[in-house]
Length: 238
Length: 238
Image (cartoon, rainbow over all chains, first blue to last red; front, side, top):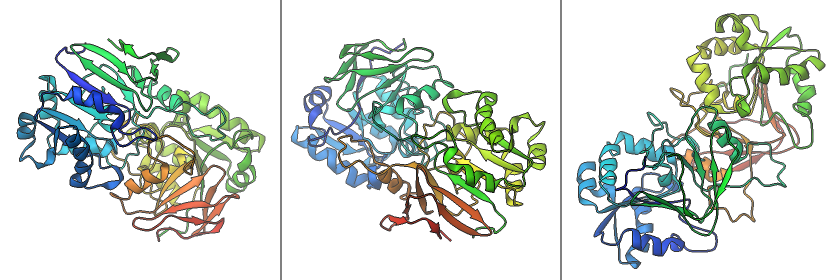
């Protein structure tokens, strides 16, 4: 069951090939955070090892151009104050293990969860999108940190695989394909997995889950052949 | 420091493009396990969700052609008996998290470690190769299981990245390259990482570490530019 008060925007990637950072999402982001005075940015995934301040500066500059104020969530005194005072949340990409470990250790999980469950808009890209699923067990990232557990917020009743890549039919590489890895996930876990290609995003408003962007997304369900979902309203794992 | 009694063969992959399973390693494997009556196979990484018995049957058939007896390690009564009675060990590829979790939960880590430290030959491919390093924190696999910790056996003073892939200069994909992922690992961990390309393997005998196969391997050290090592004797992280 998807609680109807959730407002989610879950992007496969912050950047698509040939376009500036976040630019392909401009109209969706502006609509998502319309009415928000201050959006809190969660920089904990630290792509490339960026500091929290340096990472925050990148999306904050883009948001400022769009008339939105983005502030690093680490600049509030406590997680509880940040969750109460921010009007929305954007969790950027990077390393999912580092992100989850930092959220868990810092006591961020419950305050963020409660604020989003109350309807404050949440946006994730890549690692930030993984957090909205049941677990982060379908991340592509290296385990460079070791969270206490892999449980994510579970706002949607499935797992996500951002930056989903189709198998290259000409590849000579013997490492597992993304589809094989997700198949192995399903040997141990029941929830569906959505493979979100770069340029796709999900939106959830009023209990309606929609696939946005121009691409199809790939749905993996335990024991079933993979399927392609086309943009528009979708139902997964309910 | 690399203890001089270790006998290791650490392969990037069990299979190279266009050749049967394990075939490119035949002479190396025959030499590595010469003098062994029974080699124990560790099938716990379960590629594709194979059962332990079904997975064991694959390398056992190949080893039998080479005059070597390979027996599933799970067929011994206890880890201690297996470690004592087997003359060598081969840990196959699959999912590194499932492999490590199964070894930890089953009480396999200490008996295996002690037997290998005493000089019994160890061979790993892919996930099995990750186990020989300091940690499995540079695996490519999805976290479909959650081991208590990511510590590996640490028989070599570095980490491994099997199936190492060079960046594709023509790629339009925005997910991190392997090199970027290893760079992020080095924001948190000091040990060097060897990126072993498919077709490469390491051998350690009498304290001498050698890169085998025809390809170079890529060495990543925290704070230094990546370097290429050519086949032959190498020194890493000592």
